[in-house]
Length: 246
Ligand SMILES: [Zn+2]
Image (cartoon, rainbow, N blue to C red; front, side, top):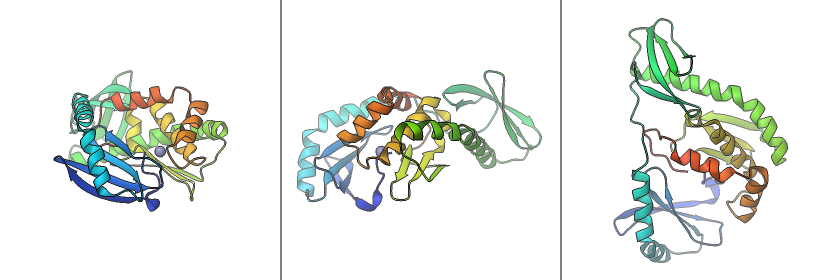
């Protein structure tokens, strides 16, 4: 959810000390190094006028810290790719469900406290089963959204013109501030509900402040005092087998 405003940013890559580093030049005052979950990708955000040599020396200076962060991410639990077969674990709003597969007309439903039932024609491919699940996840977020949007727009005091859900490989959410358009990652359906709420608030706050600066953080502290707790929950819950960064 960091790279909101790609129009204003210049992206490039550098290899430093054997590390592939994403360099993002944008309208900021200081250099920031981040190691992104879950795979420890290194990202350096810098003011537009700063040159590559300055980036190199900054990364080299922080190399031990970067390695430490990357090791920490490696220790995090990770979910392998789902096959959509009976007995598999699936997550829905932070809870773990066991997949049950029943033959019939394509459908997904929750049974009791811990069963996710896939009803599908026998010959339905794994890809189509996964697609069915994605659509189901999308519907579940869609059902929750209107209430959340109403609640948080009132708190934040800003309105999004559009709030959609889509699969994104690299962001939990994004906000196009000029179109007032918010996108939330479909994957949030697997995380505890407060994560969806946190990302929604984060993106709404971008309507007030485009950058992740002091003002942005002050807004977050004001509207959602325990936001960092939610961020930590998001980062520590089992991850999908994809290259998440945010
Ligand atoms: Zn952001």
